[in-house]
Amino acid sequence: MDLLLSTSPEKAKKKARMTDESEPRGGSGQVVEKKEEAPVKTAPKKEDTKPAPVKVDGPVDRKKLEAIVKKNGLDSALELLSKTRVVDLRSLAREFNGEFGIAGREITHANKKVLVDEFRKFFKK
Picture (cartoon, one colour):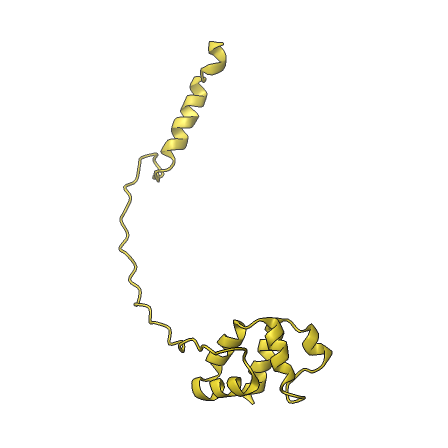
């Protein structure tokens, strides 16, 4: 039983080498002193100048959306749209009656990303 639990001298040397290898060595086998690196200075991060989140009472309709774009800009309107449910985005897209980039079944099958992209295109005109 003792033979199974003891390690051979070669295995003990390997283990010792493995733990010593975490320290860098020079070409002659001597341990090289670690040099401390100066901390890297970075410019302070500027705060994002995102517009304040827009809150709307009830579901978003065409009039409310156009007022938000006019008052707060396209970015805040798109942020609001990205938080709106897909079902509500589809209903909103149907309110634009042919002025919108997609219509009919395309609206029905469109996901949130497609709808928000179409609103972006519409309001950039």
